[in-house]
Amino acid sequence: MKKHYIDLPSGQIHYVVAGQGQPVFLLHQSPMSIAEWDDIIPLLADDFMVIAPDMPGHGQSYDPDYAMQVEDFAKVTLQLIESLGFDKVMLVGNHSGAALATCIATQSPEKVSKLIISCEMLASQSRIYEIMEAFKKKPISREIPMDDEGQFIADAWKRFEMLAPTSPLEVRYKPFIIGQAGRLRPYDIHHCVLEWMAKADWVSLIECPTLVFAAEHDLFYSKDELTRALSRIKRCEVTTIANAGALNTFEKPQEIGEKFHAFLSKEL
Image 1 (tube, one colour):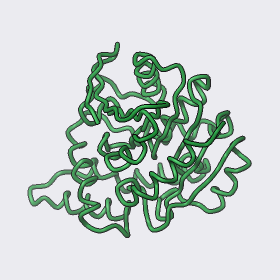
Image 2: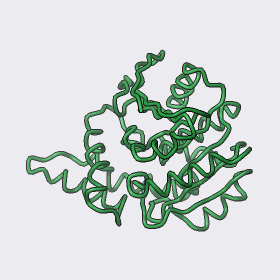
Image 3: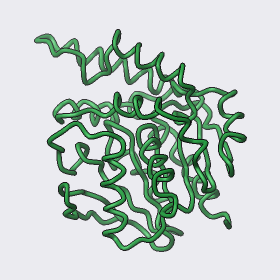
Image 4: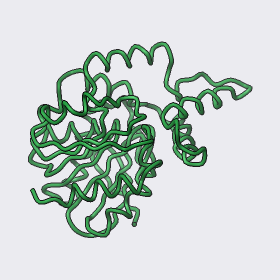
């Protein structure tokens, strides 16, 4: 796996590349980084060219000077895809990365041959508004006010426990540290992702073969919505990741990597 930087019109993007073959882009969730895919990349790189970028405002990529919207992140990602010389790619996204992948797949369908997204994208409009209201009463971890005693760190740790309630502490620790470093970045994208999701039934507009993966302890997990996805999305498969939550790529990388590989390897 090799690290690279590329200058795009909006700023410098950091990304890694591993393997050879058809290009697969892995899009991380916020406030994570490429590190979300550390254990997944080797499982795909034997048969695919895997590209994992840090989104603007994350990891080692540039900090935007304004609050970007999902469409802005999609534009930057498409610029990266085109700058690297790819006409068509396969996209994989988890949580906010799934929103970004779905935005690209519906905005520029000619660029996407296959799509893998997490179950967040299946949330009903009422569920989305419910979560947006909950954020107003109980802010996300980066918005917990700092205090001299450091209680905000303990409170943030509890939030991450809810994201991965069954994971060992050492597994939860890595994304927790990345998440806390996100407090130093100027913008967070959780709110704009939810606002974008509420605008339309985006998944019904997807044209390419799609795999929806759902971790059973994910905040957005719904067995009914997972079943309904088979009719909402034209060419859809679904799979469940048992005993994992929103941090599933840290929790169950082997299982997820194998399921991703199997879907990406199928003939169109």
